[in-house]
Length: 250
Image (cartoon, rainbow, N blue to C red; front, side):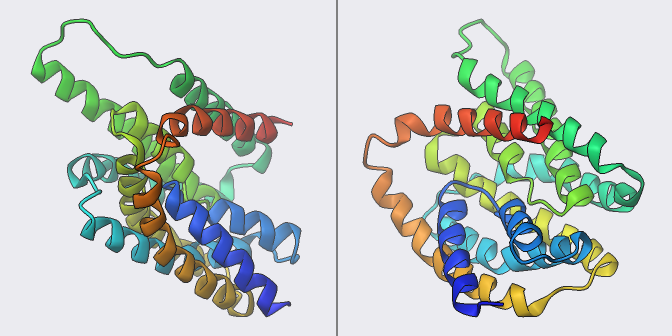
């Protein structure tokens, strides 16, 4: 395997996914299976182990900037962690075709929701708003957790979409997503390591590159937060999610 190429791939993916609140495990999974020919079980374990250090680095730097909303993040984690565990235990019994179809539909619906969402101007009590937010946070946590548990993906797309729909803005959403993904990916990695051997020859260069990317991304986020790019983040992510969903169905 080309170690330098893997390091560069890790740097690019690490920077982009930490910048936009993803984990990158799904991207690593595709590269490891499609480009480097790893078996699915080994690729799933390797991808989750690879993203963990960069997620932790990114989350720590966002935390020091005061960007993470731990209250909302913890609401999602309450349902996400059990979903990761259940998904991991059920992963061997779910056909790939059915899983791909379900994820495709979910991503399309989330993407459309982000594109069509408008400010809710109807009167609503504080208690109702809190209960509604908790319910939505729980649902997004379950969906993201199942993505991690079943397929070794990071679940970042669902978590990020959920945070935007819960009202977090711009890089507050991406920072909080990174925080949530640390715990989800750590839980998923434990189960997938048990089911598939980690390919450290591929994983270490990706991990090192991604770590450097995670150091760059939060500083870059501070610069971009002062520009007009934040106006386009939500619709752009909505379109991206919908396209990912369509690809999963094809």
